[in-house]
Image (cartoon, rainbow, N blue to C red; front, side, top):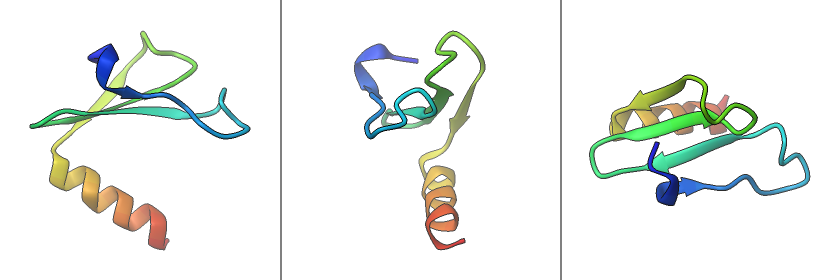
Amino acid sequence: MHPGAVRPPTGPDRGDCVEVAACPDTVHVRDSKAPQGPQLTLAPAAWTRFLTYATHA
């Protein structure tokens, strides 16, 4: 994941977060506790659908 594109965790639970890097053609998501671990790579449209679902579920 491109380190300059990562949004750092915010809020009181900084250790239990995901980090998101939005690039022009992909969105990368990883666990903030394991930045070298696996990550999800999504199309921007899939990320938008996920956010819509997560905020309305």
